[in-house]
Image (cartoon, rainbow, N blue to C red; front, side, top):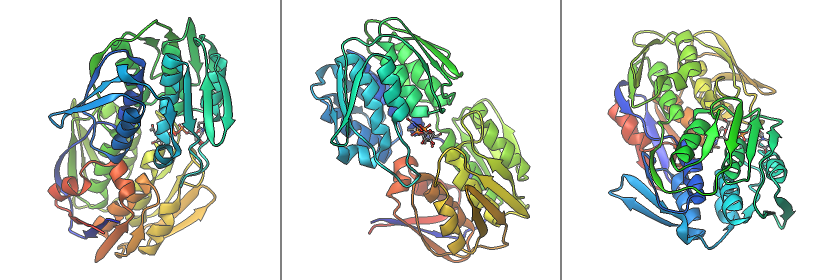
Length: 419
Ligand code: UD1
């Protein structure tokens, strides 16, 4: 298995162009199944999770073509299979996003249950309950969610917990349902709004996406169209933390700065000078040691759980004591144990990581346990004395496009060692 070798190389400095958002591209690819003619998508990142989704769409019978390596065309008119098997779902939970579109358009879907994963139980009970409210008959059999329906009917759905893919799945199902659906306590993430914008461009009638109440007026069909996926706020945030942790300066370009508000507030608290324009943000920490921050993760617009691990790495070398509490997922603090192996003074108390920043981490072989955990280990490696090897980097390839090239351009010493 490939690993990344990282050596301490001083402050990062430069600009990095941010890719399309993984968490928008995946539901949009799934949402293209709702249409009856081809959909062309721009700014889709080259990531393993995208490859897995394309594999899944092809397996369902869709034709997926890559144009000039830049745009993906999905032709869903050839769909002839309704089964998302365990081999694909186990590598990527977001495969469950095909359930809503298949059910709404074809009246049937068999999607393997994702099972446990490195960051907790992550159930899909709210997706299932929502589909039932829309009139689907759902059985759990042989490890599969087996869903059947005639035409779905609009309903009022109040989500018990804010769920991003749950909101997206139900919103997609509601697009072709008869009548009005209201989704309350909906996730407000920008990626939910991006999916709604995409679907509206194909003829859907969704309002309120990006707020806690989404209203969908069902339509008979969606046609084809083109769409550009929004930029990845988590990738952008990760490179800004790279600036802060290395006491350097990084400008991320091609971003939507307001999507980064919660992250920028914490970077400013850590002492970074933040400047921004219409589509760029710069963090400047030159000549200063970052200060530790306290934060708690919560759904958007709160501090994103997908940036928590990166801030743990920052706190590990920051001045003073910090506290990071993970509220969205259980068991998402595995990176703290690996950071301890690099000399970090961290204590895990329940779902909180308490830190006393050290002057210097030391390089070590470390193991990535999930996508964002691996990003935090790479960040720590940038400033650790000596050499750090981050193993199991297939996690990082799921969510960061060309990470070694992008960090390399900023001055990092990082290379992939094929294994
Ligand atoms: C999405 C993101 C992921 C991010 C997460 C939280 C994608 C592809 N992935 O994951 O990167 O970390 O949002 O911002 O967009 N829950 C239930 N029942 C359900 C569904 C969820 O109890 O049916 C719980 C989960 O266990 C978790 C919480 O709700 O504790 C939030 O999970 P959710 O928002 O669903 O995460 P994902 O959509 O899987």
